[in-house]
Every structure is written in structure tokens, then in C-alpha cells.
Image 1 (tube, one colour):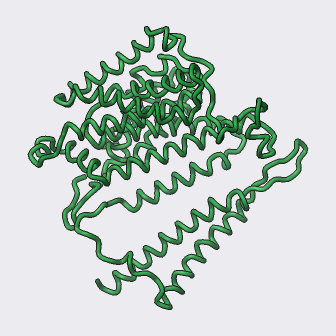
Image 2 (image 1 turned 60 degrees about the vertical axis):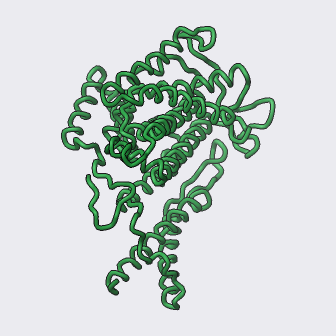
Length: 428
């Protein structure tokens, strides 16, 4: 390796490491330097100090760069990261990684940037719900190549599992979360097993029918599901057992932390809760893609016959994709029920499945960041069009058609293969 290439790699790692240190400094410094309280007319008021926080981040970035230069000057800088990569490697687009990191940083800071604006935080919470569902369906459609039009059925299973267990048996949010995920995964296997021989349009028709069967069961099994009236008075999630309310039989979040209760606390808590669930979903899917099962999903998507010839158990691969996607939808359904406090079959119609599928296709099948961009567009564009009254959905449809004309492969259509061989160019 030439000295110029080595210097470029050194610079790349220095900047990457320094930016990581700056992001950590921003997250740590936000509650200590960026925000402070002062006495106001109505009690304590939050005051922002963005200039001080920005200076702290810049100092952290510059200090990290300086520290790396000193370490290298005295031959203490580790060369391990500059070693040659193995033949089979996990690839990624550097610019997309940085764009994803920027999205995460913005999502973490959003409640502080829009403090007091409940509408923005509520809308962002809805976006994150669809992001989580889009990442789940992306496993089935984008990675495994199985067209699923009944994905909302697993969403409904998760929501009704939490609604029934919490109202009838007194189980909490965190207790119901794994139960609902496991039950939704079971339904995914039940759907996947009889459809293993089907492909394309035939598979889509069967999954569409499965979604409608679940909805009709919810409507007609009134003794259990409440029928068209649904389930109400679903309890909200708590912060380690501390409810987000003004008063209660025991300690509350506001009383323990010495805060004055406001309705905005619950909104921000629900936002950060779905943000954590969405990030864990992304982490799970990203890790699975690098494991043999994730590579098998992509292989089945590209050529199922070749996979069978190589000895891959296509049946188990498809079932694992259905089960994983269904489990993630179940988690999303639990949060939806907890946030709304009321669920009914009207919340789980085919239009929801179509919306989630549109997010995956519009973002670019297989692209994690594309799902985020598409979910943001599909949620925010209708909100921006509320002022146009009856022309709102027309403008929304025109915008979607325009996007698909400009980007027919999705917003992020060029995605490298998860595993590639150096010197062999991946197909777009």
C-alpha cells in the first residue's frame, strides 16, 4: 500500500473517530450545557444555550483530532484498523451511514428543538411507528422478496394482544411486549407455511386474504375482541413503574423527579419509547442481514432454484422471514395500542397494509434509510396538505406519482449487496 493511500486512510479514520466523539459530546452535553432552568413567572422555565453546546462539540472534535495526531506522532496510534480486509466482507455506503447518523441525532434532539410544540412531537411519533413497521415488512419484501399484502394482520395481533392482556389480566406494557411479539411471529409462521409454494401475485392474493380474515375475526368475535366497538381504557406504558400522570396511588414520574406535571411529559416519553424500539428494530435487522439467515434471505430473493441446488433449506428461510417481520409488526402494534388507549378493527384495514408496502417500495426495497425517508414523506405530506381540504389526497397522489417517475427504483434505489467480494462489482 502506497504512502498516499495510507495517509488517506489515516485521515478517514481520524475524521470518522472525531465525528463520533463530537456526536457523543453533543448527546452528553445537551442536558448539562445545552439546557438549563431559571425562575420565571410561572415557576421553573427551560432555557437553551445552543452556542455553549456548539462550542463544546467543536472543542471535542478538535481535541480528538489533536489527540490522534499526538498518539501517531509518538507511534502509539493503533494500526489494526488499517489491515487488509478479508475476501468476503460486509459492505456499506459511507454517505448513507453518515446520513443515517444525522437522522438519529436529529430524532434524539427533536423534542428539545420543538419544545412545547406537541403537534410536531405527535407527528414524529407517528412517523416512527411507520418506520418500525416499514423495517419489519422490509425483511419480508425487500430482503426475502416475498410480496405480503396482509402485513397489517400481525400489527393487529400485537395491538389486540396487549389490549386484552392489559384490560383483562392486568399485565403491563413491558410484560406484554415479548408475548405479543411471539404470538405475532407464530401467526407469521401459520401464514408462511401453506404459502411456501406460491410466488408473486398468487402469494400477494393469499396474504391479502389472510389480512382480511384477521380483520373479520376481530369484527365478529365480539365476546373476546369487543367487535366493532373495539377495546378501550388500555393503560399507558410506564417509566420503570412510574406512571406519567398528575397523581396516583403511588409515586409518579413527576413526583419522583420533582417536576411539575404537564401533559407534554407523556407525549415526549411516548416519542422516546418508540424511538428506542425503532432503533432496536434497525439494529436487529442490520445484524440479521450479516448473519447466514440474512444472506439466505437475499439469495432466495435473487434465485430460489439456485438456492435449492446449493442445499439451502428454502422452507426455513421463508418461514424465518415471515416470523421476523411479523414479530416486529407485533411490537409496533403493542405500542400503537398503548399510545392510543383504544383500538378497533377500523385501525387495521387493507389501506394500512398498502401504506406500509408503499413505504418499502417508495424508499427502495432493501434500504433501511429509504424506509425512513418514505415514511416521513407519507406521513408529513398529507399533514402539510390539510389546508387544501378536499384536494388534499389528490395533491398527495400527484406527489407520489411524481416521485416514482423521477425515482422509479425508490428514493434510495442503489443498494450494495450485504456481502460482496472485492473486485466484483455489485449489481444496482
